[in-house]
Image (cartoon, rainbow, N blue to C red; front, side, top):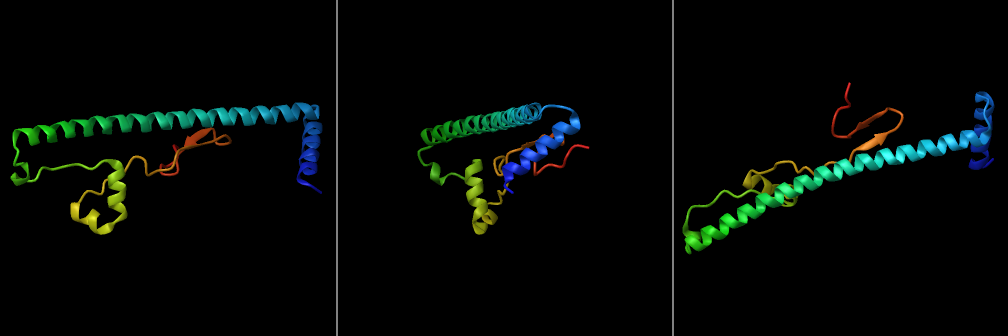
Length: 138
């Protein structure tokens, strides 16, 4: 017995139990899949918007830091002789630094990147959106 036959039998049994036509049961499940897909698309869109906002903020911070470094270079041509300036790392550099334990331990900057987590998933039967790295809301 193939998978299709099993589904067909289940659909017929469910239609009979609900006093509906098999086609009505089939359409109901198609609509359910479409709603689930739409909801997952909305969840993905929100996640991508947050990522974009984070990257925009990071870009602004890096642009400002670059301007400060250029100003320091032009105002003090011997800037290499001046005391070390505290610099921050971008998230992608932090991931590289975290991948190599000696460098991460040496600079003391092992902040978690906002992009190291998996994207959230929509689970249609729980009626909630959960994230693998966050506890479910009670």
